[in-house]
Amino acid sequence: MKPKVYFKTFGCRTNLYDSQAMIGALKDYAVTLNEDEADVVVLNSCTVTNGADTHVRSYISKLEKKSNAKLFLTGCGAHTKGDSLLKEGRVHGVFGQSEKLKINTLLSKENSFYELGDLNYVDESIVDNFVGKSRAFIKIQEGCDFRCSYCIIPFVRGDARSINEDKIIEQITRLALNGFGEFVLSGTNVGSYGKDTKSSIAKLTKKISQIRGVRRIRLGSIEPIQVTDEFKEILDEPWLEKHLHIALQHTSPTMLKLMNRRNMYNQDRELFEFLSDKGFAIGTDFITGHPGESESIWDEAVKNIYQLPLTHLHAFTYSKRDNTPSSTMKPQINAKLAKTRLHEIENIIDEKNYNFRKNLNLPLETLIENKIEKNLYQGFDQYFNKIIIKSDENLVGNWVDISNYKIQKGNNYAQL
Ligand code: SF4
Image (cartoon, rainbow, N blue to C red; front, side):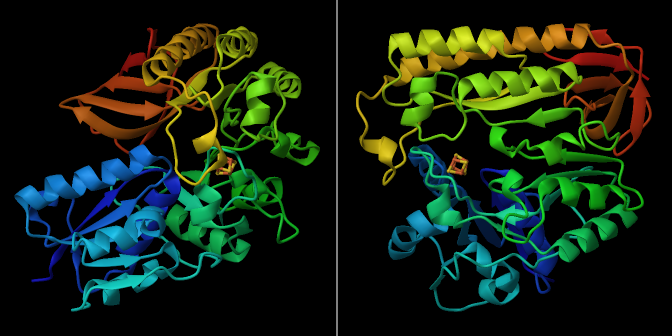
C-alpha cells in the first residue's frame, strides 16, 4: 500500500494552487484528507506575518503530540523559518516552491535536506483537477514588483513574472473538459500579469473566455492602478464575475504614504464609483493598526470608507513582519485597538453589503460549492455573495439561477 500524504495548506490561493500541483505530481504516495491517518505531512506554509509563522509552529507542535508522521516544509515559510525548523529536527526536509514538482522524489529522501531552489523560476506545472473543489484556482503569475512597507512577500516570492500563456490555456482547457466552469485567476499580484510578456490581464481573460466550458472568470486581488482603459473594456463581458476585489489596504492618504502604497484615495473613490455604476460588487483588503495610525488618521479613514461603494471586505489587523520597513516604524498600535478598528469597519461593510443585496433585482447565478450539513448547501453568486440553500437533492457542482430567496444580514437563503 502506498504511504499516505496529508497536505496542510496555510495562507493564500497561490499556496492552494501549489498544493494541487504537488498532489498532481505524486506517484508513489496516496493523498489523504485525514491528517490522523497520514504517514507524511506536507506543510505548505505562509509567512506573511510573524503570526503566520507562529501558526505553522503551533501546528507542528500539535502534530508532534499525536502523530509520528514525517514532516516536510514548503511554501513561503520555507524561506524564513525552514532553516531553524530543520536544525531543530522538527521537519525532515525543506523545499522551495520552485522544487514542488519534484515532490515525489523529495518525500522519499532518507536524509534530511534543505532545497530552496530558485526564487525567480516561472511555474510550468499544470493542474488538471482540484480535489474537493467546484471552482478551479489557476495560478497565472508569481511575485510582486510593489514594495509595500509592511509586506515580506516580494522577498519570499520574488519579483513579478507571468506564467506562459499557452500553459494557462492548456490547463483551463483540461479543467473545463473535467467539468469545471468557474476559474479563479490567482497569483501574488494578479493585475501585473503580462508586464513581462507584452500581454495583460485583459488580453488573457478574453482568451480564456473563448475556451469551451468556461462560464465565469473571477480575478484574485488586483490593484487600483491595474484597472486600465484596456481592462475597462472587459467590464461588460458576461463571463466576467460582477465582483472585483481591488486592494486598497487603507483609505487615509497619510497612511497610504506610510505604507508605501501606489494607490491614492481620491482616485480610488472615482474608480469605485465608476465600477459601482456599472453594477459591480466591490471588495477590498484593509489593514488596521499599522504603526502610525493615529486617532485622526483613523477618523479620516472611516469617513472615507463610508464614501466608498464597497460590498466586501478582507480586513486584517496589522501584524509585525520582521525585516520590513513597517516593523521599525513608531508608534506601534495596541493590538486591542487595532481589533476594535477592524470590527468597526467590518460592521460598516456588512451593512453596505446587506443594502447592496436588497437592491439587486437579477437572478443570482449560483455555483454550488459544497454541502454544509445534511440537506444544506452553500454557493456563491455572480456578486460573490454567499447563498445557503436547502435541498433534498445533491447540488454540489451545479449552477442554478435563483430568483426566489430571502435576504438576511450576512447571507442570502433559498429552498430548491
Ligand atoms: S502589492 Fe504590496 S501587499 Fe501585495 S504582495 Fe505586493 S508588496 Fe505585498
